[in-house]
Length: 372
Image (tube, rainbow, N blue to C red):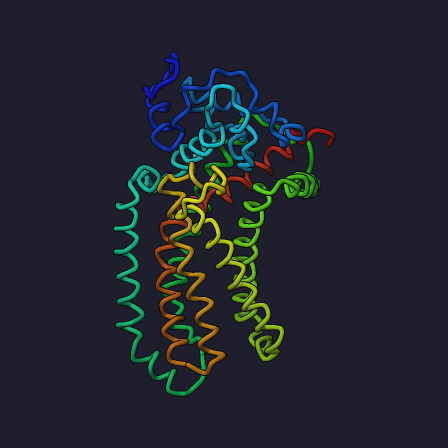
């Protein structure tokens, strides 16, 4: 075992796996409960981070997989700052989430993705990227040149087929794994309120919690980074839907350009800011960026950053009437999307968005939100 006290565990492999996944201080925790006591979230939500860590120390896998507490954590860091043992409950809970993600996935790919080294991940990612580049700059290259010669940027549907296939495959994996997560987390939790009320409770809870957290500088930075990523991705999804449903929308150049550049810049800043902080060595940088350096933390940013860059370059080249360069940027954007969708989006840290939503929904319906 890795330091700290030894615990009698019904499944020591659980302890070792969670420690490997980033929960280095798992065995330092002696169950004082300060992590739950100081967390603003626990005031409004009936969860116990101490209990989640204890389940893991004891290796009780069924309890771990059904516990929504790790998904409730927003990584605000109060627990780590106040832990009397110098442990890091934030990191332990993140490692437990990775463990849960591995078990929710039926393919085994998430297990490899979370356990492999950064170099191994980059190798597989690069192999898929090379295949994608071969498709767009080999098979489709002559068509790209033909369309570029017209002086217009036209998104011909054939170019989108490889990405559409990757997106559909990733959705199949996400849906099936999300269903498994729902079954694990909802076990023995009876619904007390309806679907619509659950959504209202969750929305109200998040607004209050995040508004309070915005008053703390280091929390505000991370909240804004996550918000920018979500807004950027959301705007791109909206723009894609508009292109398919109502392409004439893009005739309104002022509005469409505003949305396009807003999506590109928010995504680029949201991804770029934490990436720069992780790469930097400033003493002013909050410990969150220095401690959360597991390979999945890096890949969640490294796979999304080039997508954000290419999206911005695509529209800059287009507005400068550099049509061929715009097509090249678009082909690169699609090339980066394929490995992102098949690896990171389907099995990496970005799956946590799905599991987090499921956990909050189950908690809301089971009456875990106090005062509701």
